[in-house]
Length: 230
Image (cartoon, rainbow, N blue to C red; front, side, top):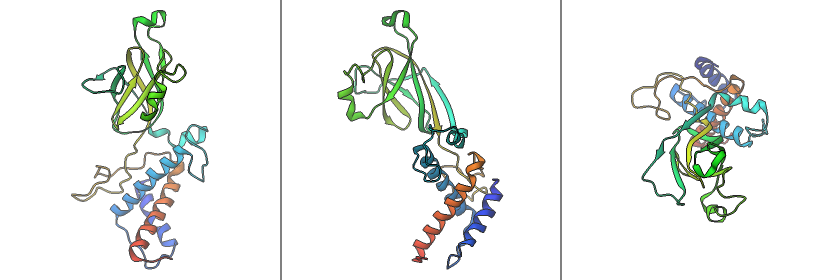
């Protein structure tokens, strides 16, 4: 849908519910509800909690296509220094601030102790911080030539724990979507830090679902404010 189609469809669908008193929304309010609906739907689709689609992001090609426009790849060999890790083998890498969900990640190990395996690619396994003590010395769960552990400490920083030197970190992830902003917003207004018009970047096949959820959010919000339970 174009932004005009989103706006017109929002008004039409909202009026079709026959809510009393009638709800009137400006373009900023519509944009806010559309953006919130988009973010909720992405989280539901990724996790498999959405009752319509019923499967998580990695389970079917169809579901992966819904979010394919948000998939990005990032690679870095620049380590962040001056950070205190939970292990003597900790190393830190910055990750993009727009990272929502990491779907694939590997570390490239470059260490003379690996011999002919120098440069090997190791899987990166996310680990809750409270599991680190039990896992770090476990031969089946701890760091090895095939496995590197990852702890999340900030939204833009990853702590990797490896038995060998990590030369490079590569990840593929679902990025935070740009907000749906129907028109350039007046001074002082923004959504997720953006104030200029921007269209939905998701696969058009789920635009209708975003619109329907946005209208539902608007009705819930406005009826709660007025005390109308119908």
